[in-house]
Each structure stands twice: as structure tokens, then as C-alpha cells.
Amino acid sequence: MLQPSTITFLRQLKRHNQKAWFDINKEKYLDAKADFENLVQQIIVEYGKIDPDIAALQVKDCVFRIYKDVRFSKDKTPYKTHFAAGINKGGKKVHFPGYYFHAEPGGYTYCGGGIWRPDAAELKKIRQEIDYNLEDFKSIIKDKRFLRLLGDLDDADTLVRAPQGYEEDNPAIKYLKMRSFITGVSFTDEELTSKELLKKIIHTFTVMKPFIDFLSTALE
Image (cartoon, rainbow, N blue to C red):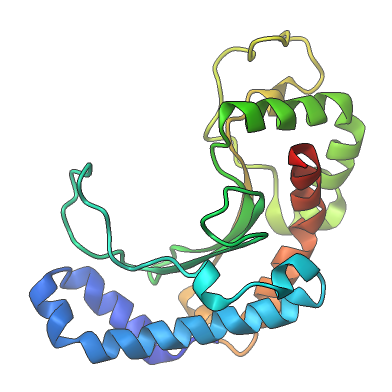
């Protein structure tokens, strides 16, 4: 679970996203950061029992900085209004299928996984794996437990036309058009401070593990 003070800090940061305010409240930030990092450590320990690749990670490998890179953004507010961690083989800096947890009050907390915008060579491998092993892929994403918790894959990032080398009548075309392969669930603010939070995160990761494994196999 996260402490209520961590949620309060993030809510206040959203209202006062300025360096002057942040500097004055630096101690609150450090306390909230430590709280989130403690949760990530618990995730690594518990989920590492299921996935040995995760067990080898350290918290610093996973947690993203709260400071934004505003050089190419119209939004010049200096800080992210959430804490987030990428929990995958090799850590957050390695673009490899894995898990993601994003804590943000206001109904924006997200627990999910997959791979976002793989490069052209990686995308080609994933599409090929889906095309060659469609039934195996569908058995994973159409599994009752997967559908009940996660629903269908996120299809917000897809091509309009079939990718090069594939036809529109390909049985896998819905998935072959995807440019990102992502799934996940939202958590309420109440769940963030619930004693059940860690259990729910581990359960979500466990249900999506066959999906992550399929994507990882494609790239290995």
C-alpha cells in the first residue's frame, strides 16, 4: 500500500506544479518517493518469486524520475504528477516486454504491461510470431482469466492499412496492425492506500505473464 501522505503530495503537486512550490515541499517529495520505492521493492521481491528475471532487479533500475523533459513539449510544467516504475528484464532503460505501474490520484493509476512502440525490427519479429502462432497467441489473450481482468488488448495505436507483407484477409490482421502491444487495468485512489494493493499488482502481473512471455519469445 501507499501512504495517504503520498497521495496527498501528488494531488498538491498537480495543483502547484512549479519549482518554487516543489523546493519548499522537497521533504514531502522525498518521503513520498521513498514510500513509492518501498512499494516497488515489495513488487520485485514478491513477483520475483514468479519471474526470476524480475528478482534480479533493483529499485533504481525501475523507478522513473519525477522531473520532466520539457524541451519538446508544449506543457512546460516541470514535474510529472505521478510516480511510475518499469519492471522488466534489464530495467526501465531496456526496451523489452515487461510490466508497468503508474500511481496517480484522480483515477489515473494504471497497472499493465507489454511493449510500447517497438522499433521496426522488433515490430517485424512480433508480427511474425503472431502470424506464425496465432492460435497460441489467441489462447493467451482470449483466456477467461485474462479477459475477465484485462479485457482486449489496447488498440488505440494501430495502422489503418495492413502492414507491408500482410493482407487484409489475414486472420491475425487485427493484431498485425498494432504498433504497440499493451494491456492493463486502472486502480482507484482507494485501492492505492489499501492493504490489498500489492496483492492486486502481483495478481495483475501474473495474469498477463503469458502475454509478456509470448512477446519476449518473439524478440529473443
